[in-house]
Length: 191
Image (cartoon, rainbow, N blue to C red):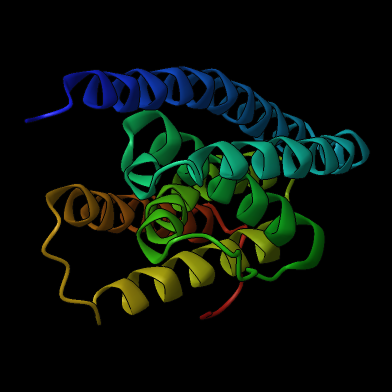
């Protein structure tokens, strides 16, 4: 005979852990957005402090997710981790000029990486306004590189494919910005 009370307990336990996951995901998501906002304002010390905090929160989130392998594909977890990846990559790029590896599922890393060009584009516009044209070119080059690398994949997931297409549009905006700067005489010669 089927033990329905055992099945009910398993479902109840999963739901309980899922609720914890959702709450902790919100914490990670909120901090990720705050990091990105601080970096946009060039408040790197605040961003660095928040990155330490977010690492702690992410460890707690991952501990909850270990309850069941399915939890790493729950929407709230996936969105929180992809936003975390975006924040960590953005912070790292602005601070060091480099992208970093992050120990998350490959799909989550790719999703966060695909969102990065939007933030980099915002930074490029900010830098152009300050006359930091060389840095705008560096951002255009890294977005071009990210797009080139993403084209080497054969993504079957519609969400990832849409995000890769979005990189193309961010790259086009950056190229338009570079052209505008050149036409205005703010860039000498070819890049």
